[in-house]
Length: 492
Image (cartoon, rainbow, N blue to C red):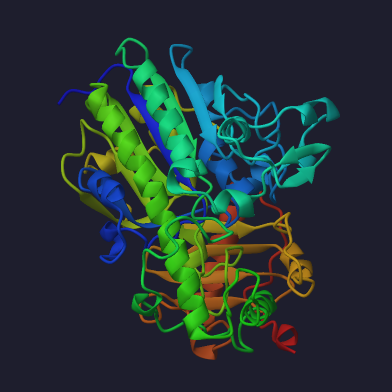
């Protein structure tokens, strides 16, 4: 089919969804028919990586096309500066731009950065608003629950609000995911005129904690699959940061499950899968509305996440570490005039390439200052990702420490830089911790740190130089150890 003049963009951004929660990535147990249907007519990127495995920096990359160190959004709850444009500010004025759901880039519930149509769901970030007068305003989801007769159970910044624990205990049709599904259907229905191009970004909270919801009992915990690294705490050759994370979570009961036991972890995983399915149920309605609007062939659809979830691998819960489960996410892109059936894209993909690629697909100019590249030739089959290295970073803390994490959070202040090479080797460098190198070909679960192995000294040197060149190209001044550093002192 010919490319439309002004294609729409529907961008689905889940929160904390690891890559292996869809059938196109090998999970045949989880019930995600809408995600599966989307993948069946889309490009599916085999190895898709975030730029930093935590919410705000990753979201900023996906909206601006900049690395976290460039946008200066180094941790959570940092506002996106007014002078940095989002993709909504880079498209022509012909587009109606909506942002529904979790924002996490400053003034949480307010229209900004080119998104003139806003439906908000999160009232838990009120303390990060830019000015006190904004504290009087609450999200549309709050108003929805009030209309349904519920009473707020918490208070923050002078206002009664609903806690996430309260929201997670609601029936399916009252959840944030369902609310966003309904509001997205309204947006698509209202903008079905082909002469009214639109961009809609839908930011689901799920399957982010609290890892509980209406589908808690949908999956049998005993059937949850596990791999080699499941509940295997990082050893003394691993970074102190990951060792501390493993030590904390393997003795935690913060989520109502005994995470010192396999049964507890599997129960948590079953709940996590339930919240992935909860999102999928909302996507079914959104995709049906797109079909009914007559614009399915005029709309680019993207499904991805801001980072992954360890879910017991290496004994860790959450993100913030450089293991694959934390930094690797689904990346499914439907381009109706280019993709008919599922097309798997081998090689390494980085979110840094998302904005320039989407702008190009939409026929919009791509700013020259973006470090990423337009991957349209890859989608057309004219090029490949077989020679692509990707780079991931960590900067500062995660911005919202959990109770009891006193031993974890100080080590979150240590910057890291990571390269995953085209031939599937990974180097994690920190100037103040034990560095790591893994062969993802023979050791996909990252169980054997080869950084200090003399037999791999040349490879460590080569990959360190790759990182230094990337730093030079992208004006990244974070201190890294030398190519011959051993970091033995970090192991004590």
